Length: 245
Ligand code: MG
Image (cartoon, rainbow, N blue to C red; front, side, top):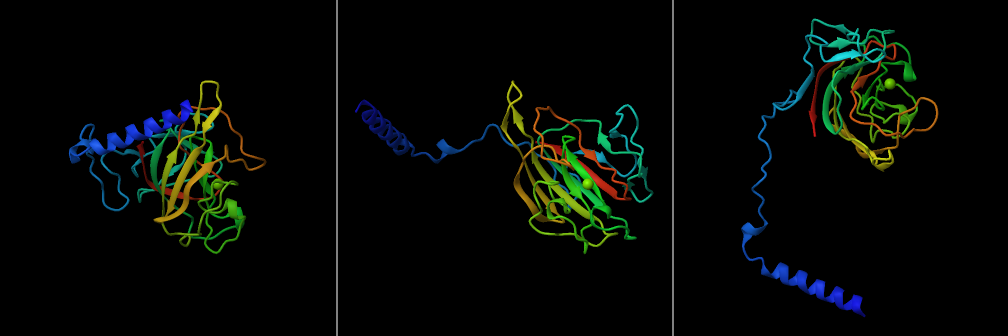
């Protein structure tokens, strides 16, 4: 009975509170105000982005195997870089958590291999969670390993691939997983991916590490580098920028 009375009273109080707002200004937020930035046309970097690859050098990157070594991939005269097969993955010097990431990639024009062996690379968020880069233009493979899949976890909503030799874009919105002080997952990572402007992952839950063999693994971690995969194919990248969120 006491409970019912309390519920009744609080509902009544809420109604009174609503009823008392007569000034439109009462529900306006002026402070804080969003920071003013300059957006850019097309896929160019906005003013508050960190440029991860500007087409000139790999100064923001190191070898994943040994992060005291410069990134060993090839920088091309046209402002792109290309995987140097056998040298291993590269990763950013800086570490990131929640972010907006833009990058452009291109599979070699000369088609070689099939399935997972054609234009394979990958973008790893926080060094662990792979958004697959693959040439799936008229190339069949398992659905949860296609271009734009969260590798072995979530297939893309559609196949938005352009033909090999053409530049393609990824725009990735990423919320890092949250862990408590005991290292227990309290909120999974989430990811939205646009491939050539098309939504192919929408707020997809990340189940853990993207393993080639076996199930995803979950273990606590902090901010970590963005990593690009050397899968032995001559995949190129350009115009890579990131905004920390
Ligand atoms: Mg890959």
